[in-house]
Length: 182
Image (cartoon, rainbow, N blue to C red; front, side, top):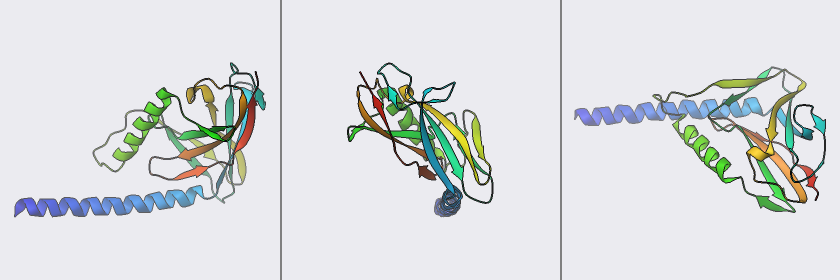
């Protein structure tokens, strides 16, 4: 009888937690509904020089700009143990897979996402955010593609970026094109 009561209590607590999590995730998704991501290809990450043609050994960076069209400031939240920006790359219309190291990191991030509901889960690492003032276009991130992909061979590429949070809220940019030349 006592085990049954404990099990019922545990199920009830889990149901309440899931319900609150679902409401929080829905609330966070609505918070992100006012955010539009824009991408800018740059060749010099430090200098932010715009560029659309690269050689195979060039550093290829993507500047992520976020337009907050809402009436209030919003924070995009990042944790160093979770991959928040995920680029989606295609070459000549065919999907380009992430490097093996990044696939492992993304899998570890997804594992962290699963632990998000666990009330005993403790984060291991720091959390930072990009503050987006109302009605403003703000730099929200910088992605170096060699952290996500193996060497880019010559061809025409299309990239878009998905921003995601641990609670499941996400937004995706429109795609931009760039070229890798021999």
